[in-house]
Length: 533
Image 1 (cartoon, rainbow, N blue to C red):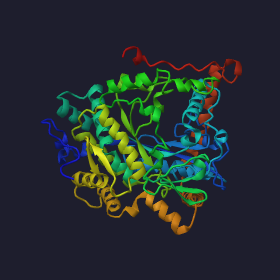
Image 2: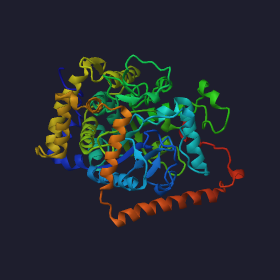
Image 3: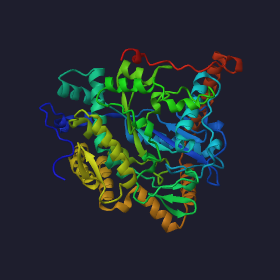
Image 4: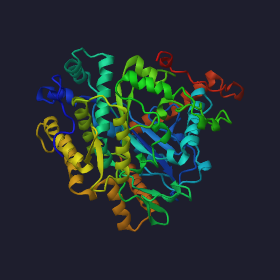
């Protein structure tokens, strides 16, 4: 292809900030990780056991929770100044869990293991408090709307907050204004739009879910993109990530109501519509008050499926969008990473350094506003890449023009190279340079792509998805059991678990919700903003 992916023509271009004098600011950021994984039995079926008590309360534990299903563990690290520190904590959480899961394992793939029928997949259970019951009812709603099996798909989320020293310089250069919650939020939304524009490259490089178990679909399911590898294993041979395809975390209903990412105000206005307007087909689930929180297009803001989310930490029962409007965007949640099945913790260092570098690239390059047509093309790009990303002639859209996906990947690498050189001070062994080199190798040799490596292993080992997944799960558990957790660290995690039960019981006692007569119907606070837009 000719020319750069993201062009910077403005006289106020912030691309000039990729300079030695700003290196420390570019490197300075806060990092957090979330990893989801379902527990499995030795028979490779989704566990039917409740969340292990030794892991604490899934409602109030600050680091170990459950995602959709009761058998779906979700880790959420603290915020760290470096990527290695975030990975260290994530490893400790896994090691602590490995010691507790006696006869169970963590499934290593994004696509789930052998699944029972929908009615035997238990959603997360969080006790009798208002917040606990709200969480369970919300998950019931997700199950009714999208199917419980789809909700058992797992992934990794990478949270990043840029340092104020970087954001301040960008604000002065781009807007000729000192940093404020308004300019800070706009910088993050500018970054989000560029992230969507180059997202096909990331789906291609990090997609690791082209194989799934036959129990993921009902017996009548047919799709010409799948082939049977054996009686229990389905494979989409050109797919990169089924997790983010139209059989995974996407929604046709949500696709009818695009959410603008041009600004916080537009984002909030569109979000107001979808969390306050009834969607008629969802009325059918209103037969019981525990079936869903409401019959709106989205029950809550977090129901919206996206590759990246603008985030602010809510206070108490504050709504997500109200928190954003009140205090602005605090960080970005990157949601497109499949689990790396070959990593015991689901993610490895190089892809996080690569993502950090990509996000700096997206932040400092010019980011025109997007219209409905471009947003529609982003969705087409996601569909094309998730199903056909490994097909050499696959094309995607960039600013309305079709280009080959492999050309986009190549050009991104070319444009990232000087950034890696700057951040690592031309040290080829630096973390950003090694991260870029690892991705270059995938472009040179597509057999190194995560999806392809999984398929090759299945073929070489003559194993089904279930058999290979269990072998990896056993290997990962053995590795984690060897992690040297000090007595003090074990005590720290045990104390967190114990304290979390205390916090849950305290919450339930104060409400009196441990008595059924005091369990009042769940009322969701309306968005304050919705009365203003």
